[in-house]
Image (cartoon, rainbow, N blue to C red):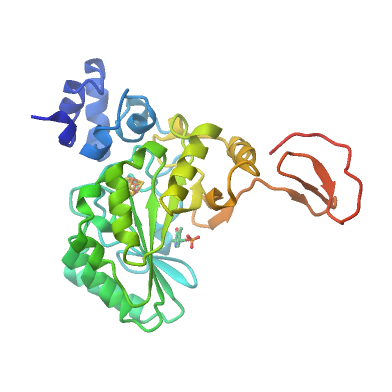
Length: 354
Ligand SMILES: *Cc1c(COP(=O)(O)O)cnc(C)c1O
Ligand code: SF4
C-alpha cells in the first residue's frame, strides 16, 4: 500500500506511519473517541514532522483532553441562533445553511469540533426542505452561506439541488460556500462539482487554508476550475500557534493566496473550543504580526483580523489600530506617530508597533 496516497483515519495508522508515539496510544484513543480524526492524502503528503505546520493542524494530540476553564463546546454561541436544524441566523441580511457536518479532514482547532464528523450529520431531504422553506420565507436575508462541515463534500447532484433552490429565491442575491476541499481534497473538485456551484446570482467561494504549503499544484488546479466559472475565491485562515504565527510564514501564506488570485478575507482569532489551547495566539501578538506586514506587503494580501465574540455576539475586526481619534494622532506603517490633521510636524513619540 502506498501510504502517501491513502488517508489516515485511525490511531493505529498514525502510530504505524510514525506520526504519533506508541506511548501515547491510550490518550490518543481517548481523543479519537471524542473528536473526529482524518488526515487526507493531500495533507499526509505535506507532513514532514508530526509537529510541523501541517502535522499540527490534523494529527490528534494528547493535550486535546485538557479543557481550559474558558473553553466551551459552542464557543461562538451558534446554538441559540438556530431557528430550524441546519440554519444559523445571527445577522439580518445573511444566514448560514449547514447541509452536512462531514469534512475532508478534521482540524484539531475546529470551533465546531463537538459537532463535525463522518458519522451522520447530513440533513435528510425533509430537514433540508424545512431549512430551505425557512429561508424562502425570510426576505430580509439576501445572502446564504453554505458551511458545515464542508459543503464541497456533498455529491455534485446534491450540491446543485441546494444551489439551484437558493438561486431560485428572488431575495437571495448571494450564495457563499465555505470550504477546505480545494486544498484538503483537491481530487474531489471535479468539473461536475464545479458545475454544481454555478448560479445565476453571485456565488463566492471562501477557501480555508492556514499555510502556504497547502497550495500544491493539485490545489491550484482545483482553484482554477472554480475561478474558470467566474466564481470569486476569497481566503480565510485561523491564526495558529506553531502553524502560521510568525511574520514570514503569514506573509508566505497571504502571498500564496494572492498569486492564485485569492483575496485574503479574514484572519480569525482562534475560538475557544475544548482542548485547543496549544494553538492559542494572544490578540496583542496577532496585531503585532499584521502590523509588521503593513506597508511591506501588498494591500491585496491584507486580511481583516477578526474575533467571533464568545456567546454569539458576532464577529468584529480587532486591529491592528492606527488612529487614536481622541488624541488626534495616527501611526504610519513604520510605527511613527503623526497628527491626523495635515500640516502638523511629526510628533515625538514611541516607534512601537501594535
Ligand atoms: C461568520 C458568520 C457569518 C458571516 O459573517 P461575515 O462577516 O459576513 O463573513 C454569518 N452568520 C454567522 C452566524 C456567522 O457566524
Ligand atoms: S474544515 Fe472547518 S468545519 Fe471541518 S474540521 Fe476543519 S475547521 Fe472544522
